[in-house]
Amino acid sequence: MKLKMFGKYSVSSLLFWVFSILLMIEVLYILFFIVSGVVGHYELQTYNDYYSYLFDMPFTNSRWSVRMDTKGLISFLFPFIKTGLLFYLLVLIFKSLKQDELIFKESSIKYLKFFAIFNICLPIVYSLFDLLMFKQWVYLNVMPSLPNFIIGLFTLFVLAIFKQGFQIQQENELTI
Image (cartoon, rainbow, N blue to C red):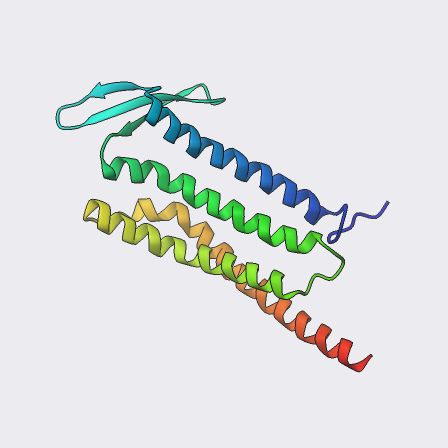
């Protein structure tokens, strides 16, 4: 049995479903956080100059603390939203690759471009986030997004291959 990379019943189809499930889990975590804050499913803890609320994250057996001010809420939600966007872009890419045997499509190129731009801009967004929210730039806060930058650069190479493949495919269709 030969394993197909593209089209129905292929690796790209499997990855589409894997990233779809991960995206749903990420969205459920964000919704859980919002709903637990609205219905009061948390413990309020008082510190010297701010309030924090503690809540149990489902399926993790861990207790999370979130500072109850704008900076705390945004700092908590930012990684979840970033990961959700990353999974969403991956779902779009693999959806376009699983649809048929033709992989060099405009939709694949468009989603790869979004994916590359998103990953390349992520360290810049993290830096701006630190500067705006905390009035300082901390190198260690930007470090976790550097692999995204490298993935973005690699995706640019894949994007160039897809563009060239699309162009050759178009020329091929015109000569036939």
